Amino acid sequence: MSRKKKKSLPPGPVMVDVAGATLTKQEKKRLRHPLVGGVILFARNFQDRRALCELTDAIHEARDEPLLIAVDHEGGRVQRFRSDGFTVLPPMRRLGEIWNRDPLVAMRAASDVGYVLAAELRSCGVDLSFTPVLDLDYGVSKVIGDRAFHRDPRVVTMLSRAVIQGLGLAGMASCGKHFPGHGFVSADSHHDIPVDPRSLERILHEDAAPYGWLGDNVLSAVMPAHVIYPKVDKHPAGFSRRWVSEILRDRLHYDGVVFSDDLTMEGASVAGDILARAEAALHAGCDMVLVCNRPDLADELLERLSWDLDDRAVERIRHLMPRFRAPRWDALQAERRYQHARSSLQSEIVSG
Image 1 (cartoon, rainbow, N blue to C red):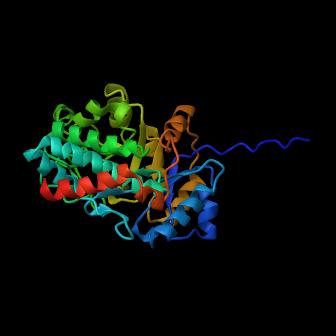
Image 2 (image 1 turned 90 degrees about the vertical axis):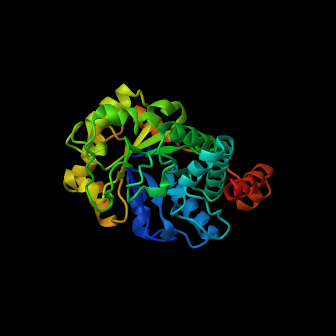
Image 3 (image 1 turned 45 degrees about the vertical axis):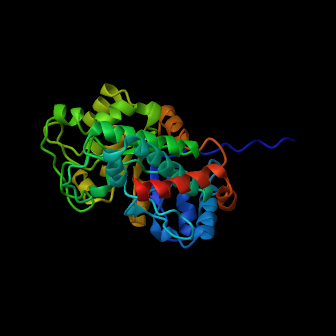
């Protein structure tokens, strides 16, 4: 008698986190919940490379269809893993400074950044980094700061394209953030509710321009900002059907994955409790919502949320998974492409 093949569970619309370097019994149970589609890692999940690999292996093995493992690993002050061999990457503003002197050197450096970043993460089992930051550098944002490439949206587009090319060489997708732009407001949406008073036309002409120029052929995913643009909609962009469905999807013709930013941030509080926040983001057009640093709220959401991703959303999320197997760390160190990129990056950043 032949055994019936077990049907794999498709990804769900919720991305959760884990507390430490190993999975607890409760976390394993949470990861098997049908509404869970991914896991985001933080610096607290990193003891060393070996432990990180064991953790990502355990997360991938939690489901028949592996969960998407993501991390905020941009370079500069937002780089979760910085020791035990990981290359310390520059803030993206550094690439913009190099551009001002030599655009060709900046483009090479940006591609090297993307490749080294992705190759090192993938060798440890991480599938996706939430990068690049596409916000414009107005010099006023507390949370963006040197995470932004440049003030000029054309330069941001060129440098981010080069970073994305580097990511792709290592088999990693990309996620542009924070749509339509977080750089103009000084408030930090982790702790405040930022309000951007500008018109739709001005925002589309400047801050949102890189999203239209890159499109879903280049940019695999987008993360909207927890910023309110009252001349466009009373809701923060990530909870706004006007921004996500009408402007990003329809007007800019974007068909990649849309992630919400962390629903536990202060900028998300205007939508209500954790269920109301998730439902607002999903109804706006997001494919997946993030619940970080609050396992109690993650469990509450998983218990209360009723939401089935449509086939197109499932397909989009699955498309973020790497298309080929990455070499483990020791094998990566011996690869000429990696050696050249890391060496060139160090030279370009120091001398650029």
